[in-house]
Picture (cartoon, rainbow, N blue to C red):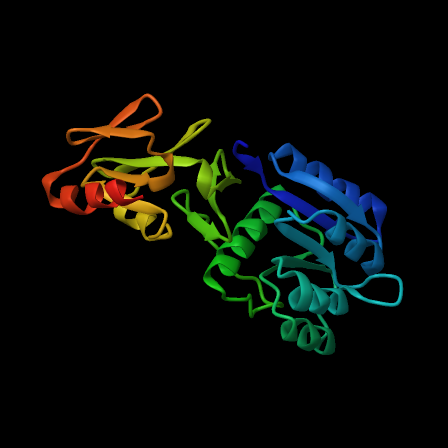
Length: 254
């Protein structure tokens, strides 16, 4: 398994609009798992695809269930972050929408940048467990190139202005170089202009371990050690005196 495109489901009963959204998202390297024109079809696709990362939902849908009712089901049964799409902003609708706690929203019509920002905002809010509260007024959101999100069993890492989902088990180690940090995976590297400590804080402590002021390793990626060196693939990772006892005690007991 390698780094994965973020998978998005579009729930929109206007097919031309849905296809336009799909084209925009595909062009910025997101993967569309399907387009649903009704809540019922959306639930079917969610059942068939257990790795959907985010759902775009039009509030007004044809059929027995509208987008808000669909969102309530997703919250209760599937726990997937969703973004509301709407061209309606009446008080009653907004009141209902807030109750299901969307993670972002987009007012129609929208452009490529607004879609990209909404996805990033939704992922940030979902990671922080903070739903979007302002569904009417224009609000500003500054995208952050250094954003690293831990959601479920993956890190969501920024690359070329979009996120990629990187399963934790695919991460080999993190390396600091002054104010930069490199996340090394089995297939590539992600470079961030931030200190190692900030990304380390997003990692589960039972799987990742600080072994040096410049290195955090995935414990499960170590394939050997000698002296004060750990072997991860073809890379030799130094273990400093500060961490030596704790590190080698761990590897001698597993």
